[in-house]
Image 1 (cartoon, rainbow, N blue to C red):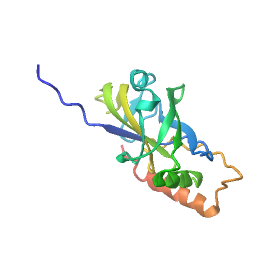
Image 2: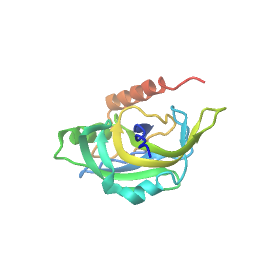
Image 3: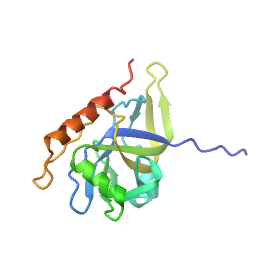
Amino acid sequence: MPVRPLAAPEAKLIVADVRDVAADGTFSGHAALFGVEDLAHDVIEPGAFAASLTRRGAEGVKMLWHHDPAEPIGRWLEIREDARGLFVRGRLLPEIARAREAAALMRAGVLDGLSIGFRAVAGRRDQKSGVRRLRAIDLWEISLVTFPMQIDARVARIETAAHPRTTAEADLAATIRRAGRSFEPTR
């Protein structure tokens, strides 16, 4: 029986619903949203991560910087599906320089994207619309990233007195979001 090579890994980027980064580097948000078509015309269905999460658990999914396997920056403490999508809670490791940079960018509201690295296990593409519905996903990693694939997902940021956003930081974050919208495909 011939051996089929594994499909190449894919990545999905969204603007994460990232909550404040705590002093110890912990944060939470949604790394993927159910039922939302992204810029690659994919829609993730509820339950798509269930088998992968049962097999790997949070400890088996890596936290990377921009999908770079040479740059792990923390660890996932909790990964689960909820009604909205793939909820994650993780901790940036302060001993790692890139993790400290990521925390500073997140606190400033400049870095607010999460992206999943995965292999599609089961799905189908609608020939008429071109939309691929993903029913099963083998989740490998979740990265902190700059630009989102799911443009309509927005950060629900909670400001803290310890880390208020300056006008310059808010302007920079708005500019980055506008630039991200320029990547939206036309139909």
